[in-house]
Image 1 (spheres, rainbow, N blue to C red):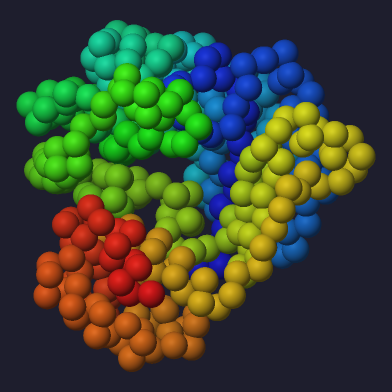
Image 2 (image 1 turned 90 degrees about the vertical axis):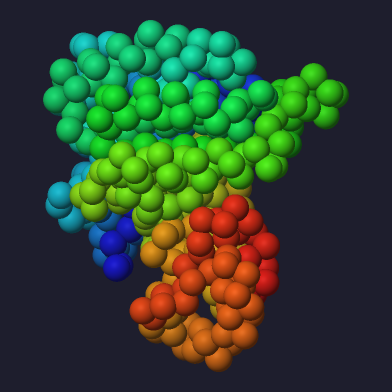
Length: 375
């Protein structure tokens, strides 16, 4: 349980998607400077004797990097940090950036888990989301990933779009299942403040699915994918088997430590959280001065840690382990939260059994309210 994860934020996109608020820039000419800075950040980071077992390259669009550049990043991490084999190494990929040569190169570089951001198998939907790929390119990328030897393949889909009905969404899920991916993540469209899509909604130019429809789509997702052999293990995530659960994302949900590299990356070494500049220029300027590119940090109080532990645990279908809660915080969960948990269980939002407190599918639809009621 002391093993942690490594996150690398690759801050480049060919074009910004209108719904995305993750930090990225479109000037790919800055890639060499970013790689130099990233190597320097890894060298400057002191992780002590902490051991890691996952690396996640996210962004941005990490698949815009050349395989040799991915290999360079991985070599820097393995040279300066301690890892316990086997290490899960995930690369996020956009179908519009993939081809047989790149896929073979990523495999040779050490990537053993590929997460492809399909989002939709409908061209109309992809255009509405501002994606750079077509449905045909998505299907081709998935087939080519298999041919390249990826045996741990994930597909990301998005729901909650304007006018999206149950029948249309089930067709999207069926299209994904036909490729037999080991992992499927289904994310609800969220209007993040400051994004073009959020502005369009504010101005009445964009209308996402109503809350009731989103709830229907979520429950239909659980029913469809579990009916096709996938295990629902986190609000948005489904896996073919235990071996294909996202180990890296599990680091977040189980409240284990992680270290982030790259602009806007966050780190958590309990009880301390810190984060990098959300600016490639400021990130590189600090590193050029041999300073870690920290934008801020905070030390969480025991109460804040308990709240986060509960919130993150309830995102998973296993929920919060009561013995683990007491071991971490020296607090008896039932004594502190038992009455509130019993009330939520009576409303079929939680279950309390076998030493665990877990959200039901209905509870997952209102996790913020459930967590607030408990803490």
